[in-house]
Length: 458
Image (cartoon, rainbow, N blue to C red; front, side):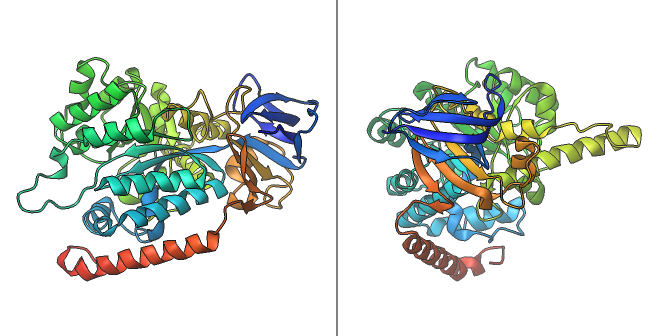
């Protein structure tokens, strides 16, 4: 792999040891960041990219997304969580074929790349057969994105004689097969973890069984907590076992977790994925960000459902930041009669949620999340000369509060350029669009044919 030399850009590294350079150079060798500095010498034969007028930053980490819903954009725009669970999981999801999962994951991942996300945590809980799972992984791999694929479980209504999904653990034999045959090494772009139900959505025995499997395989286990817990003391019981909850345990949402339980989970090293926009729409309660910050907990952020809202990390980061600031303001007004005397959450902290802290959540911070010599070269370049950004006084503030997907000029994953000069370098995009549209139309039609039997309108 030839050397890649990015010359003369404003570098936002998200690494305190490197800092932010108003103008600097970055050298990539063998897919890794070899050096960063204000005036580097380009090696002979290096491919040079003129980064003058650009902001160079680490790729975003989208810490929570259900990519399989890409063909259903907008369908959940006005749904509460009850409507979503009923229509999506008990309805629409049951009509997905493996090729629907494949095209959704492929195009969804390509869109993430186009929008500056280089690492995607794909929470796949619509994989009723091994063929669905394989198709999901195929789509991610073909896109060329870095991804943590979280193997979940579907949630249809049980047929007569079947157990409810809350009583069914993840398929150990299937996951062991994937780990043995598909994910043969962690030194690859797509790695694996588990999307478990946890004590929020399963009986205790299932929650413990799934967590033990994740611990045995030494992989991330992520779980939703989006309302009342199915096992109210589930986290307390799991923490009491010792080693069951740790840095590879991820809790998504968690808005209603009690203060003492939240402190216990933070003390045990669990990470949290906040998806502020969907949480506010669907009635989960206050996003957890501010409570986690007070406890020193690890905050990561994600877009959640493609079917409901925008999945670009510029929007996600801005929404999460302003939501946290707004809640602090409400609390201050309630206590003192006036807003805070100064901003309580800075733009750089929000950018950490979307980069290095997201990488920590996925167990990938040793590889990505910051522009650090030795790490893999997952890099995004933004056109700072675009009118919505120009002039740039503070590149961090520009990224978080002014930039958007249209500013993404170049995207590099592990040293490979996947977007250049504003153009995604993937053959056959028109054909992929057509396949995605056909998939979404077929699923909606199939759902419409059965919706009369459901307690929700299409």
